[in-house]
Length: 502
Image (cartoon, rainbow, N blue to C red; front, top):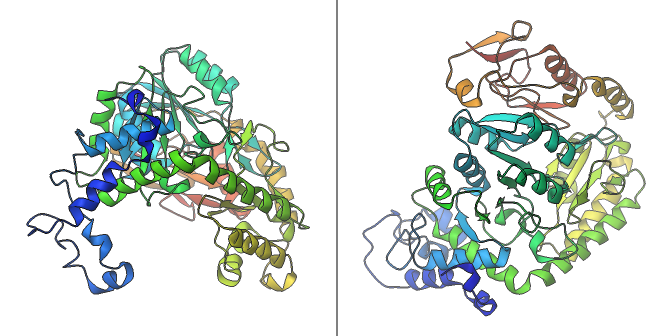
């Protein structure tokens, strides 16, 4: 049975949830893993926290529950229902998060020494995929808005140039949407990529809701992507770590993809996570448009009210160059004019105002507004922003940041990562497995980096494993630290030393 034969009425079914419920309440003597035996051996603190019922369903691949790596029963049916609901030809459930899906996508399309085109602001899971596969990256810098220090998407022009220079590339990967909800022109990019008869792979971790409402950006599949990975848990109703991989067309071999997933997924998948994917699919298939309408209304209400508060500005697709479309359910608020960094505002929100953001950065706070939010949540968010504009909530030690950021923009724009092109000297895999040594920073120029070093803002890696270290990258990273930014991925947080290939 393929998803083309799944009737719409079948979307009411939850085959995996139903099978797990039956197995959980079947009386028997359990002589199989897990060791807690349906909760009877669970430590008391955990039992007090979660209750006994959830552990009845924490079961392994028992008869009737199918096998994730060779599905023939309820998992197969649940995946087919998901494919129909999300617009795919075939869908795989992921229990190791979207990380596993991104790595498998690269493993299924690129071999050792083969090229893949991808953005500099790719998730670190893609770097892991490069290391596992041995593929060689061809990096494209995303569009960057210096006025607000945010990186958006790669553009069709940049993709066309990379494909022309590297016609032997085996795949192109893009992030759609970004963490801040920025969406590139995926339709145009898909057409360009397909002219070379290679697949467009999409990290759509933050976009699983796109398929369910006309006022959201188009889903990656509807725009022509060959493969997309979605974090069902991030935006929809699945449990944390539960994601999906969707496929259409013939440019990616399903058999190779299945084998790749076996390399990066647990051989003991949690049926609680799998069942949550089944239930989340049913919820969206039956009520998705209604739920997304409510979510958009909440997001629009928050956006309107917060944008009217003096000293705050909200990310807007119309105002930010290079941003093709914006997911309105993702709210990014710039707090710079308050004299606060995003990190300081986040701490005040958390400790004093009862609001927790998804992502603080130097200038911004970003919030995910989803089907689980309520009007009360939005009221509390607006109240928090209204309150934080009062000086009594500002730590006494804070000095105004406007002058700092004027200096930031004046200096960093001259050596932003988009102003220098880096090509790998060796593959990330070779750099990962090579012997390394740690050297003082001044001695690392023209050596090959063994580390991934990423400054925030703007969140674009300045050094990748396998790339030659150049003076512009070092100078840029030093200024990021001097002006109050953060650097991740470096084994020395002070950035006085760096690991290089020996």
